[in-house]
Length: 238
Length: 282
Image (cartoon, rainbow over the protein chains, first blue to last red):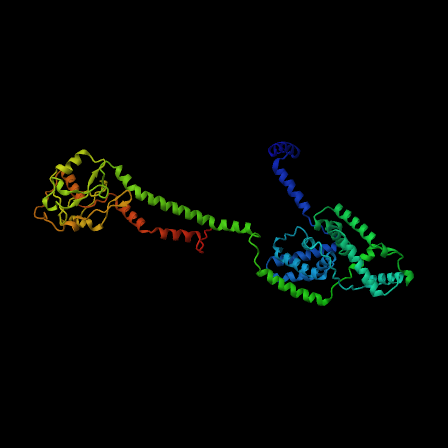
């Protein structure tokens, strides 16, 4: 059966290309180069990616201490991503450390086809997903303290004014409800909404990190938002 | 103040609250310390064997590939050399028309007294049996009919050129010393080898001792091929005859003196089984 398929496949392919297997190899190389082009959303992200690439090259050349710059640059984002997905600060700290160790151990394989940020996020997402799948039945919140800034303070003040009660208690209750609604989502939907709404990544970057299409990302994002809106209906009422 | 606030709280507003859940500065200090410890542990920790089994296999093949081939070639060459040494002498001799093979260890020794040409002084000497494989009939007849002197020791030989070895292509010069005896011929202590095994031929000199010499009755100088053959047969009948060339005999002795354990040790060392490695790079 395989032989028959191969026999049928070859003549049509040669006719279509017309240049033999050399032309096919050339076309595939061009296609691979286009597909491997890093997806950089904004000029700021491009500058960041260039700076990261310089540091990565130093690390690959043997300057191990240069990896500390990458840790300092991305530790909060990586930890935030993992924390939002696990809702457990101890697990988030351990997993974030594991992510940086994995990145350090395999940085010699990083060839610069994607940005370092995307590559690091992919490691973080995969590590977190495997952790969540291992501890699927364990739901234990260990939440961080909310560091309120201007907009969030206004939001809490408005909710307190609408619903009444103690401000701090209401803020704590809202935080728990938010985490509960997030944890009710599936792992993939939670990942998409965390990357898009909390970390601020683009659809293309999320698609690259999660190895799926942009349409899939949009679909998952829409569905996750619908679920969360239904779950937080009481808090969304004016 | 309240009038400026938006009327409806959206999901994006609530999710923005999630961004404010950040750890404190002390957390990052502890985080960094733990990360350092984990990095050191990761550097020390050994990876499981299956993690890099492919890499190890490739490394092992690259490491042992060429030396193993070289060691195999060397071992094969050694085996072929030894096999040629053990069989080559017989085949080489048998291929020559005038070759004589001494089979003293295979057939019962015949007393020299049974040979009519022997003298009384050596009647009790167990002589090696001469078996002529492709010997010319005339030469065989000479061995019996020619009245030659069979002397065990101290037989003076005239300084003419004679052929001792089976291959007559390279005649051996016995030297110009007229007092050269058959005892001198036994200096090399060469034992005939038949089919790779050493045959123990009793040394006539030690068995009989000094017998009556014929020094006072020197053999006449041969004037024909017949007398040369006769003297050759005298020498062949009195002492073990080296049947192969000198170079082959030396190589044979060396190959027999190399013990098998030494060969195995050398081979093991070359292929690196005892910890030592040999790397050949081009």
